[in-house]
Amino acid sequence: MPAQTTLTQHSPEIELPPDAATADDHRNPRRRRTAAEPEPQPVGDLVHPEPRHDIDKLILHPQVKTDILAGLRALEMREHLEAVWNLSAIQPQQGRCILNFYGPPGTGKTRAALGIALRLGKPLYQVDYSAVISKYLGDTAKHIKAVFLAAQEQDAVLFFDEADSLLSKRVATGESCSTSINQNRNTLMQELDRFDGVVIVTTNLFENYDPALLRRIQRHIHFRLPNASMRRELFAHHLPNPDRVTADYAVLAELSKGLSGGDILNVCVNAIHAGSADTDPAKWQVTQEMLEREIAKVKKAKAEHAGEKGKSRRKIGFGY
Ligand SMILES: Nc1ncnc2c1ncn2[C@@H]1O[C@H](COP(=O)(O)OP(=O)(O)O)[C@@H](O)[C@H]1O
Ligand SMILES: [Mg+2]
View 1 (cartoon, rainbow, N blue to C red):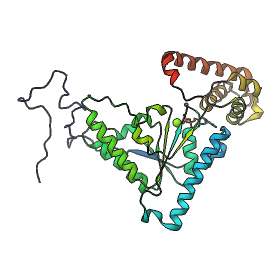
View 2 (cartoon, rainbow, N blue to C red):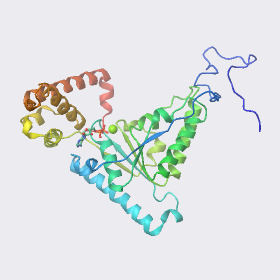
View 3 (cartoon, helix red, strand yellow):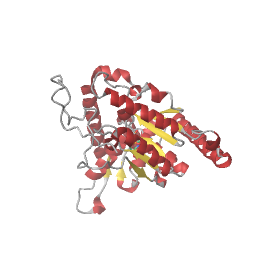
View 4 (cartoon, rainbow, N blue to C red):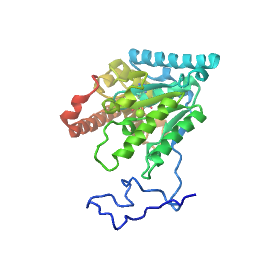
C-alpha cells in the first residue's frame, strides 16, 4: 500500500505568492486530516414529528394550504405506486421528489416540513451544515454522501432547512477554494439524482439558489406573511389558556401588521413571561397592554433590522 503523504508544510523549493494559503490553512486543497485529528461527527439529526406538527394546525393562506396538500397527495401517490408496482425496480429515482418551501422567516416552512413528514409516517433527517462542511480535502463530499445514505437507511424525508446557505450559487470563482466548492456542489447534485426519497428544501432567499438545484425541484410552495384574520387566529393559537387572557384580538391583528407567525409566537411567549411575574401563579394573567408592548418591541426590532439591510436588499422581495 502506498504511504499516505501528510502535508504539514510547503516544500521550500516552491515559491508561493505572499497571500497563498499555508499548509494548515483550510483553503489549501491538499490539506488532509492527520491521525491525531478527530473523526467526523454525524452529519444530521433524525427528527420524529409529533401529532402537534400536523399541517391542519398551521394557519395558512388557503392557496398555500392547497399547494401543500397537492404536494402531499403527489408524494403519497408515489408511495402507493411504489408499494404496489415496485416502480423503483423498473425506473430508479421514480420516488425522488424535491419540494421547495420559500418565503419570509417565521411563516411556518420548517413546521410544514415536519407536517409533511408526519403525514408520510416518516422521520425527518435534518442536515447539519456545520457538520457537513469540512475544512479537510474530500471530507465535505464524503459528508454529503453520508447525508443521503443516512436518509435512505432511515427511510426519512431529507430536509435541507435554510438551504440557501449550502446550495447558494454565489461561489466566488478565483478563490483558492472555488474548485473544491464546485466539486462538492457536483457531488450534491449527483447524490440528489441518485436519491429515491422525498427531499424538502426551505429558504428565505430563493434568488440565491443554484440553478442546478432549481432544475431538480418538482414543486415550489410560496409561504406568505399572514393577513389580519390569520394574525387574529395566530394570537388565539399561541395564547392557549383564554381564561387568563384579556385581549382584543381584532385590535391585536391590526397592530401586528407585517408580523409573521414566528413573530406572533414570540410576542405571546414574552407576554406570558411578563404576565407570570407574581409569586402567586393564581394571579398570572396576560393583558392587552402586555401584548401591545411586545408587538411594539418586535416591530421596532424589525424596523431597525430592515433599516440596516438598506433599501437595495428590500427591493429583492418575493412579491408579498
Ligand atoms: N402559519 C403558521 N401557523 C401557525 N404557527 C406558525 C405559522 N408560522 C409560524 N408559526 C409559529 O412560528 C414558529 C416558527 O415557524 P417556522 O416554521 O420555524 O418558520 P420558518 O421556517 O418559515 O422560518 C412555529 O413553530 C409556530 O409556532
Ligand atoms: Mg425555518
